[in-house]
Image (tube, rainbow, N blue to C red; front, side):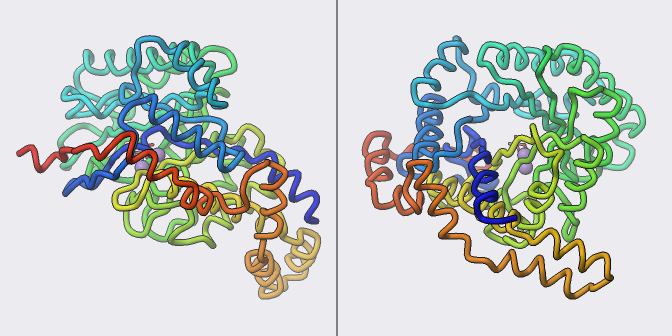
Length: 386
Ligand code: RM4
Ligand code: MN
Ligand code: MN
């Protein structure tokens, strides 16, 4: 496509950032506190709003409940609005309580399952109060040992629980079902892959779609093919963007494999079925800053999308039809190798933001001001509490 049409498409790209990406987080070995990291939901909203001001393309922030729980959600939504922000996906947390040791929706105990469903309903109510239309559900459910629980029974419990949650959705709301092939369960995960998530969504109905977290696949998985198939089936609900090298590393989007990100965005760029796909970042920063890492992720997504939009579709279709294997591949490479910085510069000047949002943050004294205002929190990690 030509640059002008690419610019129009780029203008339409909105990226949601996660509240949990602005606070301190770490590995199971240690949490290194970052000066000025957000400590409260208000500070997390403020950071998301700053990211939107610096990029012009991140108008929504995802919440994780109860991490972001407040008494008055309508007031929280108003607070967001005052800063030019809206509340995006509501993420139920079905792993942060002692009773989820053996799972949540798939737990052997009916009482625990019922309370997990109830928590999801609470999140639907929060979505109503905050004007959000997406519930994005990730289950930490799984088992550690063969024989620990019955796999088929767990699948039946999963479908029952999801059906109950689905039945409580309001019109216009969507349930995005996320999958992950391992962790925290080491032997089995109840929603391990896109196929299981897609089967569940098919059973549930049109308001359920699959959420692809780019870090949730085994090494070497062709993620863009998953994206292509889900789009073809009308089942792609959204993304959790991040990057991985080995496991669910939650690194800056596009930092390890920008070509993979380009290939994923190419499926979005060429698809006419991509309306409604939610572009969300799911990232947590261990040793880097929070806000500039988020800005870099946003920029990398825009870069990949810009390159993907520039693929010469007509030439590619012709090369494919002729069976010109290398020729077709080189057409993709040509787009990937294009310097899109001038195009993104134009986009950002139209959006009224600086050409390099990371540089704008780093040179603007923001980090220093936040460190001054918030200080450096001390954080406990699980092992240090032992
Ligand atoms: C999971 C998954 C979920 C996120 C949690 C915190 O690995 O990616 O989306 O909510 O981490
Ligand atoms: Mn995720
Ligand atoms: Mn994850």
